[in-house]
Structure formats: structure tokens, C-alpha cells
Image 1 (cartoon, rainbow, N blue to C red):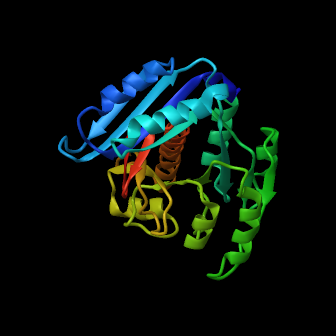
Image 2 (image 1 turned 60 degrees about the vertical axis):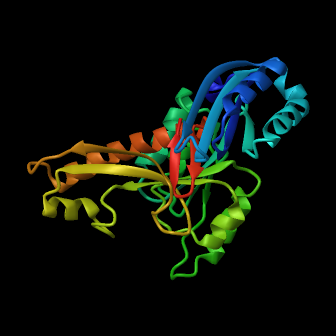
Image 3 (image 1 turned 45 degrees about the vertical axis):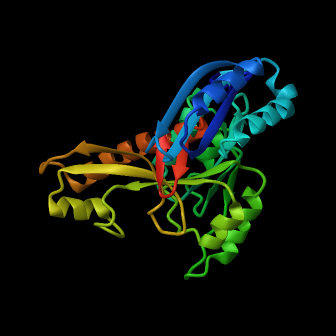
Length: 290
């Protein structure tokens, strides 16, 4: 089960702000004062003289859940003088991940399979799709399946309202597993949790249907996939992960599509894992991955 990935009394502290001397020493001393033991520490600065600074610390602290208010107060007091923003997550609590999908099921079923194997430290409270083709497969994993049909035309507010009813307050993030519907800015704002997408890496070339057929006609030598956070700007959100595979003139369009599906699965699963582990820090329109 996914719970095997979770670590009791392990805490992840994310710190970001302007770089300055003393941050590492202050955080390390604070963790010692509260009785914690650092088990992982990563940091990055794009300029040591006041540049953007990012830090991810995982530490073990027995009895964390009971003492969390006291620990959070100690962190706030420690970082107040540095004017740094921070967040704290309990690594023993899995994030709730909802999945939105359409007809193509390769990314959807891969995520459900990895979750069942215990490879993803998440729970999956629901799958929502605008098609019913994958309903029985999803339910075979013990995951609730909800069908919300797509709405013809540019106004998707009716279907988005139904999806929001299902999601709001029940999930920590959402994954678009080849969900072939554009989400509106109003929907994203109302949802209020991160949304992760996956697509082939041909964009902005080969827009629309049959991208692998178009890629074959152009004689491409590399195909790949990109996973990113969803924003108001279509397919232009902060990138989490990318990968490519080489292809040749001998590969058919169908073979390109098959190999493209393979790399999409791998890229999306890595992005989901890193997000679930609090390894992805967003900064403007790019990310820092620890």
C-alpha cells in the first residue's frame, strides 16, 4: 500500500525568500532545539547577495503531531528576522490526489497501478472523466469513478461546476492524465490546489489532433513529454519534468505514438512523486526540484 512510503514523525520544512547569511545555521539550530534530527537537507540560491533562496529540510521529530503548534511557533520565531516564507508538512500523511482523464487511459492506469504497488505516497479519492470507457478499470483498483460529460461549445462552466462539487475540500492536488479539456482560469482559482498536466513535447509545433502523424511526416528524430503545473496560460505553466527518446525514419506513426505514451507515463509519474514528496518549489514560472 502507499502507506509503506510514509514515514511517521518525519517533517518537511520548505523555506524560501531572499538569501542572506545565517539561514542554514538558524534552521539547523532550531531543529536541534525542538528535539529534531535532520535526515535530508537541500538548498539553492541564484545569487548569494540577496538572490532568491530555497531550502528543503526533512527531519525526524518524535511526537510531531501532538507538538505541532509549539514547533510551528518556534519556526515562525526563528525565521521572522530573516523575513522568509515557510511551510511545514507531515510526511506521515499522504496527499489526496484526484485524477481527471478522457479516452486515453495509459497515464491514468499507470498512476493507479503505481499507487497500488506503493510507489506513490498518495491516496486517490476519485477519478473523474468526461468518458466512461475506463470506468470498470478504475473501479477494479478500488477507486471511485465519476462521469462528468463534456459540454459542447466554449462555455464549460456547467461541467466545471460539477467537477468542483466533487473536488473542493476533498483533494490536495489534481492530475490531468491526458484529460482533453481546457480548464478555465475561474475553475483553477475556485479549486485552489495545484493541478499537474502531461502532454507530448512537440508543442508549440504539431498542435491539435494526430501530433505523432504530423511528427512522422516532418521526420522528427526526438519525441518526448512534458509535465507542468497548470495556469491560465495554456501549456505554459512551470515545468516539473521532461524526457525524450530517440526515433528514426523507420518508426511508423503508430510506433511513435506508442513510444510517446511510454515516456508520458514515466514523466508524469516522476512529477507526481516529486510533488507528493514536497520536492518541487515554484518560483515565478519555473521550478526548483530537490
